[in-house]
Amino acid sequence: MNEAKRKKLEAKGWRVGGAKEFLGLSDQEAAFIEFKLKLARSLRAKRLKCGIGQVQAAKIIHSSQSRFAKMEAADSSVSVDLLVRSHLALGTSGPELGRIIARPLVKAR
Figure 1 (cartoon, rainbow, N blue to C red):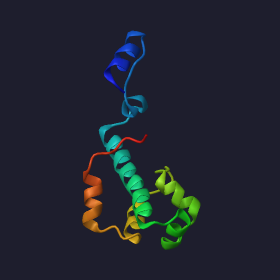
Figure 2: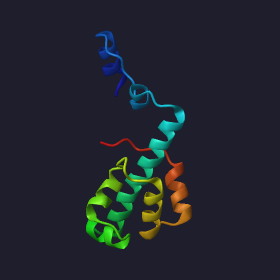
Figure 3: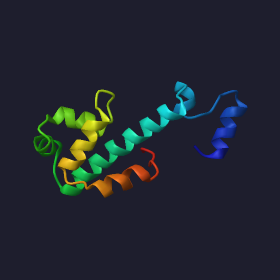
């Protein structure tokens, strides 16, 4: 949010903050969610880079299309373990996973 909009909202009595403040997350909880989002978003990017659809990707990891869609959406039912194993199944290397985790989270549009 740009600064002008933030000030305008605050002047009208609104409190402005992020998801961490709104949900009352600890630093560790917020970091874990960011970690999971990075893996989920990069899994989608990897699938698109491979030029395959969710159905094909799901077959590669021995899962269903609906489960793969949940993985790409960072659904709460999806474990970090499954995200990492799926990355590896699609050809993501260990060093590449390290770079994914290390880079800043890009905000969703």
